[in-house]
Length: 97
Image (cartoon, rainbow, N blue to C red):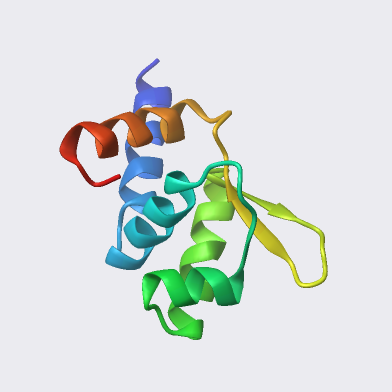
């Protein structure tokens, strides 16, 4: 149980570690059924391409967002993740969404 709690803490700290990741999560959570290209996310968040690539990589690794194999690649919030659903609820309560 202690290991699970430690892993959860590390995942949350990693996922929320930058302003860019928060912006990405907000944009994708605002429209959970929509698929976004990197360009679309870049445009909505104001992030530079290099920042976006790094932040997407972390969020994908955590399973907080999904990658869809289209050309170009598309991304979507992973609403089947308990952590993501809790974050979305927190964002709503705080008025971030």
